[in-house]
Amino acid sequence: MKQQDFENHYSQQWDTFQSLLETTGKDTKQHQEFSAFPELYRNISHQLAIAKQRRYSAGLIHRLNQLVVLGHERFYGDLPRYQAKFLYYLFFGFPQTLRANARFVWLALALFVLPGFLFFYLCLTSDEVIYSLLPYEQVKEFEQMYEPDAKTFGRKRESDTDIYMFCYYIQHNISISFQTFAGGVALGLGSIFFLVYNGIFMGAIAGHITQVGFTETFFPFVIGHGAFELTAIALAGAAGLKLGWSLISPGNLSRLSSLKVAAQEAIVIIYGSTVMLLIAAFLEAFWSSSSTLPIAVKYGVGSVFWLLVVAYILFAGRHRYATQSI
Image 1 (cartoon, helix red, strand yellow):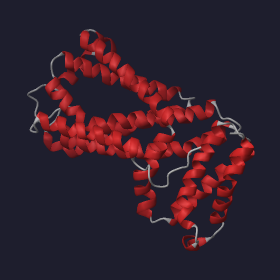
Image 2 (cartoon, rainbow, N blue to C red):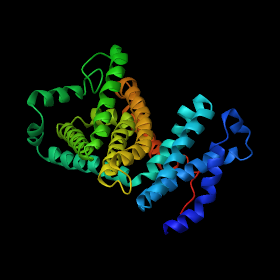
Image 3 (cartoon, helix red, strand yellow):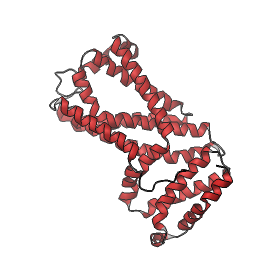
Image 4 (cartoon, rainbow, N blue to C red):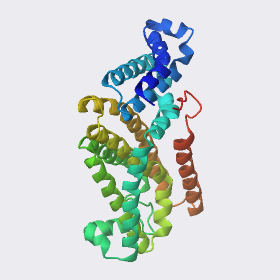
């Protein structure tokens, strides 16, 4: 679609949205068209992304960007706090943003998962590969964590320190996520590095623990919280890749302006992935580490968690404030 056709097709939406933005104060809610505000906001956000991708004029991109920024301020300022700041992002904004950035999500998953599977296989078939990656003492420490006679799995301590470990897992997981995300400002190279590095590290540990025969403790431990933790790390990488690409291919914008536009959606992804990491930390501390729960129960619940995460990303938020196709 040529730019002129694009403008002719959507200019009425932009004008309507502009008139809503110019309605001041709480009277905005009384405007006869305010019910259409959320849908218009989502549509114009989508149209901004398309205009950037197709490299339309800087003037058009600037106008749409201003509408999105002002719409964000008005929308989240008028809605009740609990709905605007949490529920909307959780049930609509986050999954919609993931699907709108599917190419970065798929690339991040590939950079994270493929090296993981490769080194899982290498360490599974050879007991020497793991020592080329990690020192002997660290390898033995991981083996001790998953010994079948351990009171708790995945850590070296008694079960009455679960609250401490919950805090530790929050700090540890979020630090990995932040590194993976923030590395995107280095033209995406930092995000690529941390995705590949963590994929190799986790895959190698999984392969070695499997090779030494501790599968009945290791996989029941990781399956529960892994659905949230591993997915969140990959999504943080996707947000970082989006930042990196905005610097590599800014279109008609300056690199700084392109980075600011990309950051609007990248931050939404980071908000959502942080919530997932909090859930993962809770499960890892209070559920996964238990040695009293039956293995079948852990596998069953863990499988349900994976299905829920996949279904949430694919289907959540599809029927409310849906964007129009072009």
